[in-house]
Image (cartoon, rainbow, N blue to C red):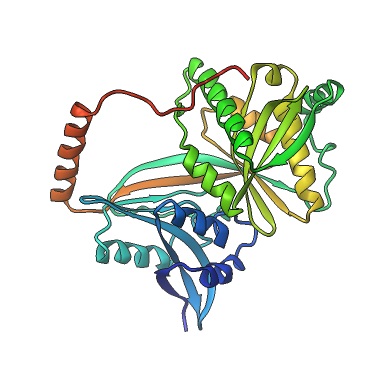
Amino acid sequence: MAPSFFARRADDQSVDSASLTDSHNPFLVAAYMRAQRALGTDCWLFGMEDAGAITAAALGLLRRGRILRSVDIPSAPDVEAGSTFWGGLDTFCRDEGITNLEISTFASPRSLVPQLRGEEERIQRTEFELPLAGKDLFDGLSSHHRTRVKKARKNGMTMRRAVSDDALDAHLALQANSMARRKARNDNVPLEFARADDAVLLASGAAELCQAVLRGEVASSLLILRSSRGAYFASAGSSTEGMSLGASHFLVLETAMALQSEGVELFYLGGARPHEEGLRSFKSGFGSTPVDTEAVISYVGGRFRRRVSEAVESIQRAVTPRYTTAVPARKV
C-alpha cells in the first residue's frame, strides 16, 4: 500500500510519535505544540503514513478569524515535491475554509515545496546546520570567529542558561538593540517583539535562554528551541559593548559546546536570505553546512473573502492609532 496523507488534531501522544521521524526538529515536539496551544492556536499534525506508521510529519498552526483562516507550517516535512502530501494539504485547506497558507522551512530536512495554489511569494533562504557529534567545535571556527571568541574569553566573559523573567527582559532589550543597528544599515527587520510568545515557549520547556555575561551584565543573549537530539537558534541580540568584544561569537560556540555535552547532534543556526551577506558570514563561520531552501506564502481562499478582508484591513489602518508595543531599545 502506498503512503497516504493524514491530517488530525495534535496531542502529546501523536506528536511524540511524529517526532520519531525527525528527532532533530524542535518544531515537531510536544512542548512546542503545548506552547502554541497556550497562545490560543489550534494545532494540527499533517503528514504521511504507511500501514499506520508515520513516515513524515509537520506541525500545523491553525488560526481562525471572522474572515480569515490561516495555516502556518513552521517546518515543512521531509517529502518530495511530487508527494501526495501537498495535494492532501490543499484538500484540507479547501475543506476547512482556509484562506492563508504559509510553509516555512525552519529546521526542515531538505523539504522541496512545489508550486502551490494561489502562491503569492516564494522566499529564497539558506538554513545553516552545525553537526555536533564527534566534532572539535573550536577547531571548526573560521580564523575570524576564533579571534573573536578568544577576545571574549580574555575579557572574562562567561555563559549562563536561564528561563527567568529577568533573563527574558534582557534578551528582548538586546534583540531590539541589534535590530535597530540592522535597521540603520537599511536591513528589512522587525522592531517589535511579542514577549508573551517567548515567555510561553520558555515556560513550556520548548525553549531556553543562553546568555553571555560580562561584569554581571548580559552582553549577548540567544533563545534556542529544543528537541531530544536537536536545537534551533530562534532569536538573539547583543549590546554594543558585547559586539566589540565578540560576545555573540563566544555565546554561539559555548551554547553549541553545552548542547554537545548533552548529546544533542545537530544545532540549527537559523537562516539567512541571499542578500544578508553579513548574517550568512556569521553563521557559516562556525563550520556549519549551508542548506538552500524556500519559504512559500499562498492565498488559498475565495475572491469574495479576499475583497472583504482587504476592505476590513484598510478600515483598521485608518482608525487604529499609531502606537507601538515594542520593547524599548534601552542601553544594556
